[in-house]
Amino acid sequence: MFTGIVEELGEIVRLTEGSADSAVIAVRGPLVTSDARDGDSIAVNGVCLTVIDNVDGVFTADVMGETLRRSSLGALKVGSNVNLERAAALGSRLGGHLVQGHVDGVATLIGREPADQWEVVTFSLPAELAKYVVEKGSITVDGVSLTVMAVTEDTFSVGMIPATSKHTVLGSKAIGEPVNLEVDVIAKYVEKMLGSRNV
Image 1 (cartoon, rainbow, N blue to C red):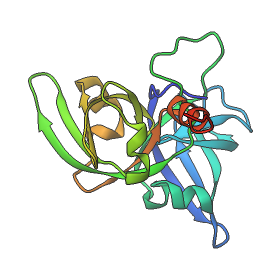
Image 2 (cartoon, rainbow, N blue to C red):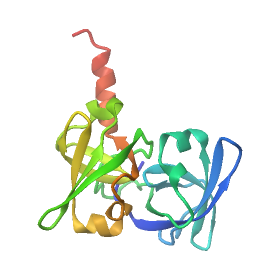
Image 3 (spheres, rainbow, N blue to C red):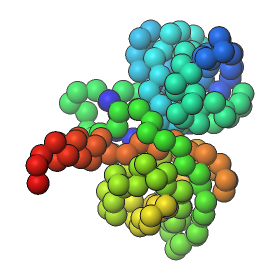
């Protein structure tokens, strides 16, 4: 479990294709690897990955074909920057919201509009996820916990403060680039529970 508060900007240092349906990535992240052990979870652009090796500030993780298909990790290259967050520890502050690191879909950045001290950033909204996205609700974009400012049938917008732009990959994302989305898991549980009732 994560909080959507990015701890560090990491860098992809190696990508190795495994079988036709997998890959191995190596990510430089001195902070998140400082106490990482084999088997620990680290979110990479919002995707929960398991550490299989950790040497000199670089951790390695296996990426299954399912993860490559359902996220934007397959588009990463050596040198790409990525958002990194270690799994939340019990008793720590929950600065964002409950994030599983299970990507629900991929969206596209479609607009950036500067404001006074922040920026309005707009993304496409996959049809199958639209019912889970509400104004003032939480959403995770590339592992960053954000509050939805506005939502339409096929887009949503968030307000990005300078700190978010500076300390996450969202600040350098260009229009047309893909992002990983994770909707609020509580909305999915509520839908399932209400869907089983006869109303």
